[in-house]
Length: 304
Image: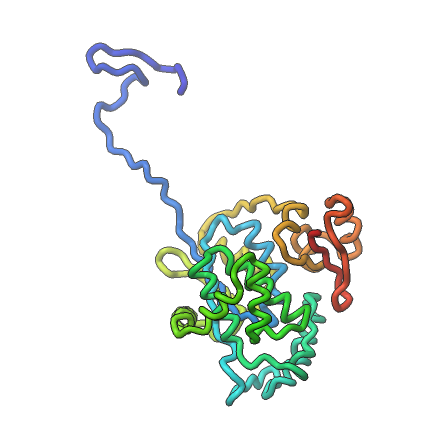
């Protein structure tokens, strides 16, 4: 407090700023706009996997402006009567070519050969596991979703199978057998159906869909994997003001999160050219703290 115009007045009994009102109305509530970002997705959505680098960067820089709510959308209940005419998909083997195309375009590695020899019959089992973890171990569900996507897209594992899901949950330090068994209960399906209802109420018809809304439930829906600028502009429009991005987590901290980091993700996160990634990694990480490898001709690093 400044000493300017300070005084002690015997009549008012105040030591403070001269000519202060004896009685004043005040409001100490710091009102901030409440923004919610709904992310409608599915564990086997290839375009959601392609969006990972951009979405990761967006949340890193601007996540302090909103509350993130991830909703499962139910991409594949089963193959009975399923049809995706836009992508020429009528049967499991049709997915392989589509996934390959998405992987090559996005440079987020996708194998996809499991659709020929061990196809996923439904995306509901991993979605129910997500919901169980979300309800019993909040904060771990996003890690599960990331590891599940690495498993199915990069490592060609069938995340519709209980043993694969159990292994992934175990990697989180949770009891995989218990979680997967809980995911088979009707209560888990009910949690999943709540997400389906929420997604439908948001007007979602495809994945990924991101809906950014204010406290009056007014906002913007963005369908498909879009550029970072698209999401920043949408958030700015909903907030009605300028945005101040946070500093991005260092590569050393990022690699300690426990999942792979692909070249494309580092390029987007740190604004680096593909040709400079290897030298950047060596400059940022201590030797013998990481492993570097290739998956489907895409470089990745992981913590040792």
